[in-house]
Image 1: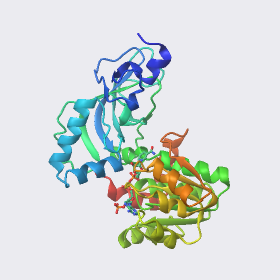
Image 2: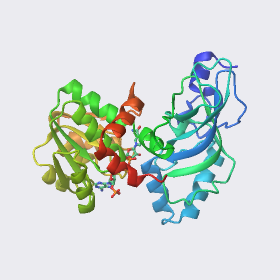
Image 3: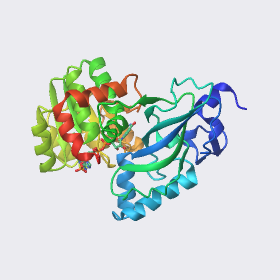
Image 4: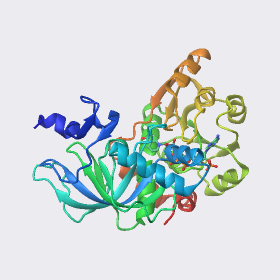
Length: 342
Ligand code: NAP
């Protein structure tokens, strides 16, 4: 058996290539038999991350049956749900149904939980052929088993919210936490959120406000989203532009902000985000569709002195912060609820 530290990271579940961590693996072992330090979850629902779902849906021309077949094939061949094109995954909810005697996670059989580690590193077996999913939405009713390692994290699902809402909010809970941290540390006053009417976007606006920012701009793509965001009351200013058109973004934003948070689910938003940010400011790239070369070379090419952060999905306290923002901000609920299939 491997060393405790390696097992805690799940290295013993990697089938190929040898020596990598589970997130980088092509294939994991999804055997439902739990090791002494593992926890097994009886899966109820997956949440595919937005960039992954959009890519699958576009590749299948919106054909739900084809999307479902593609997801089944990915999980069957990889032992996890990691979109090979976007590299991203999502997370899941379910019920704890086995706990190894040495698991340090503090979970008990019967608890309803959301995994807060990505599906890209979670051993997963699907047992029902996703028969109850039409392939048309990010949330996937599913039966099967998933494995948590000693270093995984999971949150017990709150009783006061519908599971589908908790799943949607927890999937993006890293965004408001990262935004709050950056705003607080920098003492930032102005914040631009790109893709502001989406789930991570509206939570980031609310987190920026709570962290002390006073000039909040929400950038959205359509007039309909602009109307929804304006009525949600989360931003001081709502502007409309295509996030993938850097000059349009710069024109719409006007004076660059201290902090820009990228929450779109499409690629090509890097240059607009850099132009939207003041010298000495910070860009948080939460979007999984972000390109490191596009961001780094773009900023260099514009001689933009901005700090660029990869939106880490984990920040201590991120789950509680996001759920509290959902509970306390009617505007967040107004934007998230219509996006959630309950
Ligand atoms: P979401 O709810 O679908 O929101 C995305 C928003 O971006 C939508 O309002 C969408 O508008 C808007 N948008 C798309 N294309 C645009 C464009 N060209 N210009 C302006 N706005 C545009 O997505 P989400 O769940 O918040 O996820 C957002 C991103 O976070 C995704 O890339 C996802 O993969 C990523 N993510 C990252 C982590 C992490 O740990 N870093 C974790 C989870 C998710 P429409 O609705 O009109 O298309």
